[in-house]
Image 1 (cartoon, helix red, strand yellow):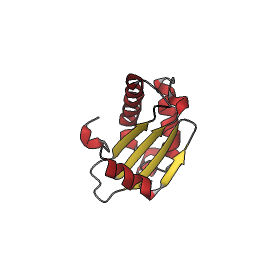
Image 2 (image 1 turned 90 degrees about the vertical axis):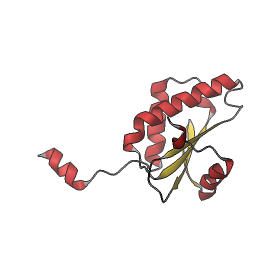
Image 3 (image 1 turned 180 degrees about the vertical axis):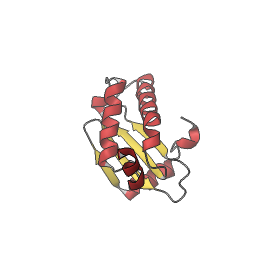
Length: 125
């Protein structure tokens, strides 16, 4: 995932958190904020040392989350900033479980692109 697709600055993190549109499941807390310029979504990931003490373990989890979001990106709205706060049950999970939980929490946050009604009717015929 390119760096332009990431929320990196502390003030950007704070902006998204101040909007306080959050949802959670057992592995993740997700904060979202809609933006005016809909070029592409931006993703920020935060992992506490309580989740994984060693730095390389936290990086390992971040890579799995980034890859899962990259695979889900065509279905996600393009004009949002997303912050993913990792909870401790995500520490030793497989890629499939992490992706499944991200899909669940993104569904709760209503981040999916809504399909056009015309496209649905064309597919039925």
